[in-house]
Length: 440
Image (cartoon, rainbow, N blue to C red; front, side, top):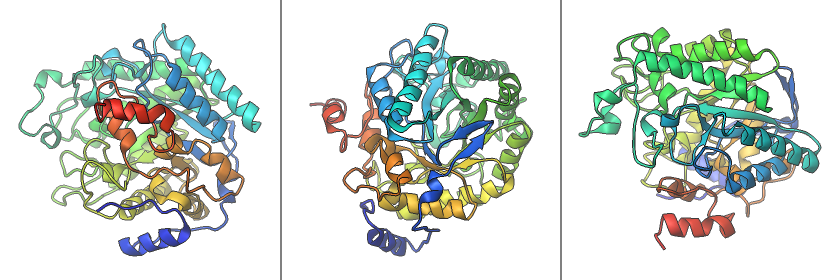
C-alpha cells in the first residue's frame, strides 16, 4: 500500500492513528533555531542537512558542476550543519566511478567547495555553517570502475544468497589497519582544507558498519564486542588526538541493522530482528570515552530494508509496516540510546516522511531531551531552503516537501545515474530520470 506524506497536521494525526503510534509534538518549533557549541564551534541552529551522495563528481573524485550546484543550494538554505557527502579514502573503496575521493590531486577542489559553501551561506543568511566531511570505505558496495568489486568483512548469505562472494574479497586485518590510518589522515587533511569536522562513517552496511556485526570473523576485527568495534573506536580516538579540541570528530552510526543474528548489529541470537540496543549503548559510551564530539544515529540499510532506513511512501517493494511505525522506531530508538551519553550532541534521522510536521515532532523530542538535532536527508534535495523556513517559524510549504517517492534512489541505482529530486527540481533531474531509469 502506498502512503502520502502528510501535508498538514490533520493528515499527520490520521496517519499516526492508522499506525497506532504517537510522537512528542510541539507547536513551538523555536528549539530548532537555538544555537549550540560543539568542540568550541558555534552551530547556528539545530538543523542538519545529512550526507546525500550525488554520484556526480569527476572521475578523479573532485566536486563537479552538479555537486557545486547542490551544495550552494544547501548553503543558501540556512542549515546549521551541512554534512558533505561520502568521500572515499581508498580508490578501491569508491561506491561508483564519480564518488568523491580525497587525494593530493583533489584536495584543492575540496578546499574551494568548503570556502564556497561558507561564503554562500554567510552572504545569504549572515552566518557560516559547520561543514562536516564524511570519510568512507564502501565495502561490499564498492564499484570504483562501475561494476561490483566488493570488499567485505565476512560472507553474508542475506545479501549474497546462493552466490557467495569469493573469500579472497574478505579484507585482512592488515588491510583494516591501513584503512584506519587512512581515515585518520583524511580527518587531518580535512581540517587543513577548512572543514569543521570529519565523520568516520559506520552506517548502512558499508565496511566499518559491517564490522559491527562480524560475530563470526576471526582475528583482531571479529568476534568480541571489543574486536568488532576496534576500527571505529581507534579511528575516532586517533583522529581526535591529531586534530585537537577545535575540530569535530563524529560518526554517522548504525545503531540497529534490522537483520537477524549473526548478520545484524543490535539484535539478540534467536530473537529475529527485534531491536536490542545493549551493544549500541555500549558502543556510543565507548565512542564518547574515545573523544567523539557528536553522533549522527541511523538504522537499517538503504539497499536491503529501506523501510527501516528511510520510511517511504513508494519504493521497490511494499513495506511490511506502516511508514509511521518505522519513523517511530527510528526516533524512539535514537532517543533511548542518546540517554546513555547525556552531554554529547545527537542527530536524528528518518524524519522526511513526517512531512509538514517534521519540525514539530523534532522540537518535541528536543524538548524532552531525547536528541539535539533534526537531521534531514531526502528533504534537502526537494526543499533545500527548509531550514530557513523552520528557523523563521514558518510552516513547511506542502508544495516543496519531499514526497518520499524514492525516485532519487532509482536514479542512483542505475549505472551513471546522478540522483536529485525529480518532482521538485524537475528541470535538472526529470531528464536524468528519463534517461537512466526509463531509458528514454
